[in-house]
Length: 324
Image (cartoon, rainbow, N blue to C red):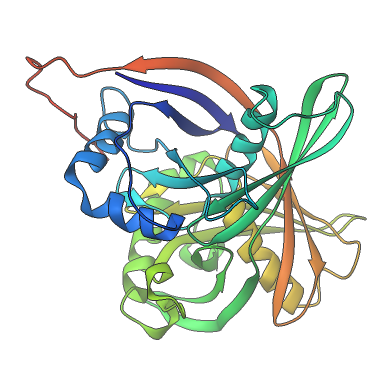
């Protein structure tokens, strides 16, 4: 039997597996990710939980593993319908809220508590704000974000490529004749797949550590101008093979912050108001600028349920299926 605690962050699901996963070997989280990718037994758990009828084509979740050292509370392997990602901001926000709400990380009823975790792209921190004994907001401080390329050829369009724990191609939605809105959902998926495929075998998809290489997703955005606090944008991330983030995408927000910082649109104290395709919101800011920028992305996450999953040996569907 496999047990999970399910959350959503700004509408994007996040399934935290709390028991039932085989031991995942490795000295580091990045090594454990490779082990999970290569193990049919371990990956069978991911498939069982992410595929229908227990999941769906846009499900997201994680396995908890030991941290790289005593400097973090735990390690995390993020997964989606097609495999294992290198980073996940909305998941980091959910894990921060979960760790405090469950008491895994002790927190005062009022104030900010840091939850440090190791993920494949590095060490990240979720700063959990509590008031009156309740979690009110989580701000995660990501690994360094930076610009990889500007105005690069990406199939039918030109894209800006940046890193925020994973590599993203950013494209104005108007460049493909669309807008970030639910009625353009199908078209955004098709265009996102095409752009990602065009960049996959190019130098723009390369990371210094090859285990972190690859275009993870395409970010389509509508620029809504500026508020008194800073830029206001609405975006949607099409990642993996046509999977759509319902939230503004946490690591994708970091990647956007690197581009906006390079453009001079995020001076000290400015805030990116970042809306999703369903109208939920993250805020993001640059903590320190330079070739590599330190970013912080804030949002909220809520528990949606606790589940126990199993597989009847007579169930001919087995681990399930995916329809996209």
